[in-house]
Amino acid sequence: MKFDDDIHNYYERLVVDRIEELELDKQYEQEFLADLCCLVLNQLPPRYIRHEVDMAFFLPPSKRLDMEMQVHKAITEALEFLKNRKRDENG
Image (cartoon, rainbow, N blue to C red):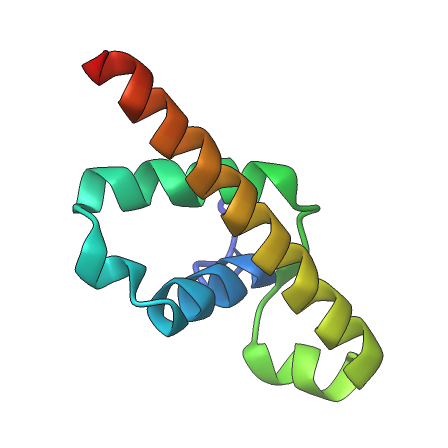
């Protein structure tokens, strides 16, 4: 069995949006951003959807705000972790 190619975790879009909003994609290399995304998404619960419009229709604004706040917190924590790791590696 093969899953539909449209199935994805809704949090992925929220994470990418926040990374672009903070312009982290202009500050860090792709490898760092890939690590950041993995750390962030592993802190968040999966929320699988097929179409973005599904979430827009079924998600109350208060839940959307809560999800965005979870993403903000997870990115802050993951950035701190990666910066500390890089500092420790550089001694």
